[in-house]
Image (cartoon, rainbow over all chains, first blue to last red; front, side, top):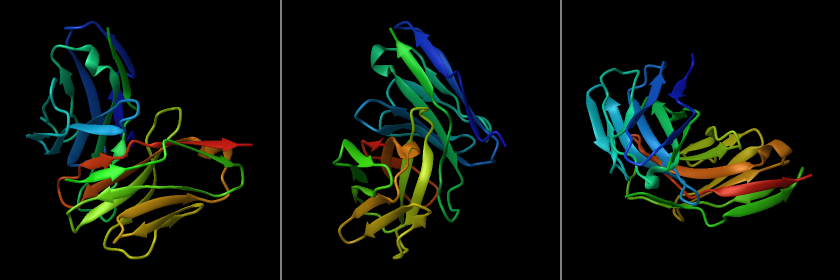
Length: 114
Length: 115
C-alpha cells in the first residue's frame, strides 16, 4: 500500500494563478480531508468528504474548491491564488467507525504564492 | 464546537529524562477521540498515541503514555527515556466519533532533546 500520496511536494505560484493539489489513497477509506498548516496555528481543516460525491466545508474553506468523484481521489483546487494561501497543505484519510478512528496523512505540499 | 489548547510553545528535555506535554480540550460531545501527533522536520504527521474518551484506562505505547483526565478535560503526553529522535513538533488533536471524522488541532509544542 502506498497509503496517502500528494503531488506536488513543492509549488510556487503567482498571485491570480490557479492550480490543483492532488491527493490519492489506496486504503479504500471513505473519509478524506484537507488541512493547511501555518506557523503558530496548528493544522486547520479546509474541506472534507465522507464519501464519493459528498463534500463539505471545514474551518477555513474560502478560496478553495474540492470534488470527490471517486473513493480514491480528493483534489484541492485554488482558483485564484493569493499570498494568504502560502502554507503547507496536508491531505488525510480514514475509515470512521473503526475502533481507533485514526487518520492517515500524506507527506504534505509546500505552496508559496508570490 | 471542539477546541484544543496547548499552552507550551516550546519544551526541552535531557536525553534519557522524562518530559510531559500539556493539552486541554473542550467539547460537548459524549463520543470523541484524542490524539497526539508527532511532526519531525520531514513534516510527516505521525500518530504517536490515541485515546478513546469512553475508556478510563490511560493509553500507552512503549515510551509514550497519556494522562487522560476526562472531568478536567486534560490530555497530557508523557515521554519516558527521551531520545534524540523524539525531537519534533507535537500536536494534540481531538475528533468526535461517527462518520464526520474532523480533527481539531492544538497549536503544537516544539520539543528539543539535549544530548
